[in-house]
Structures are given as structure tokens and as C-alpha cells.
Amino acid sequence: MADKMTPKKHKALESLLLDGNVTHAAKAAGVSRNTVYTWLSEPAFNDELRRLEGLALQALGRRLLTLGEKATKALED
Image (cartoon, rainbow, N blue to C red; front, side, top):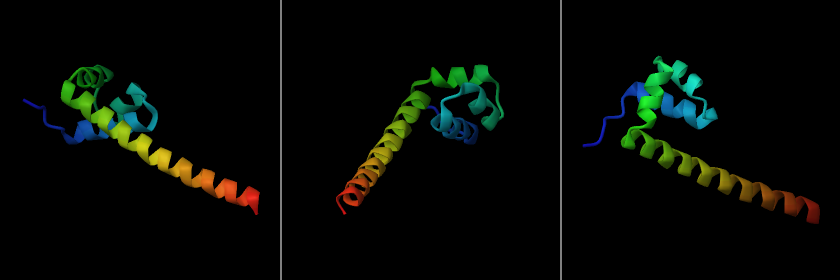
């Protein structure tokens, strides 16, 4: 049975995506660091974090390709 993603878990996930810092994630979610570490050991939470990280990396890759194309064009002009 999958754990429900609560608003506090979503806040922690957002913070972890920004800087990966458990202390910051705990503060953002209004919970203790131990709670965030407990959540990180839960398969559903960890899977969601990995999924979101993958999406962020895909978006970053697309952005880097666009910037690389613009830089190449600028150098060629």
C-alpha cells in the first residue's frame, strides 16, 4: 500500500529538490529532521523524490541544449 503524499511531504520534496538539504526540508515542512529521514526511508516518498529529480534533470538538459544552440549561433554570426 502506497503512503499518501501529505502537504508536509510535498513541501519537503520541493525543498529537497532545491538544495538536497534535509535541515532545510524539515524547516520548510515544519517537521523534525528525523521525520524527513524517516520519509526518505519510505519507498513511496523516495520514489517520488527520484521521479521529480528525473523531471528536473530532463528540463535542465533541454534548457542546456537550447542555450548551447544559441551560444553556437552567436559565435558563428
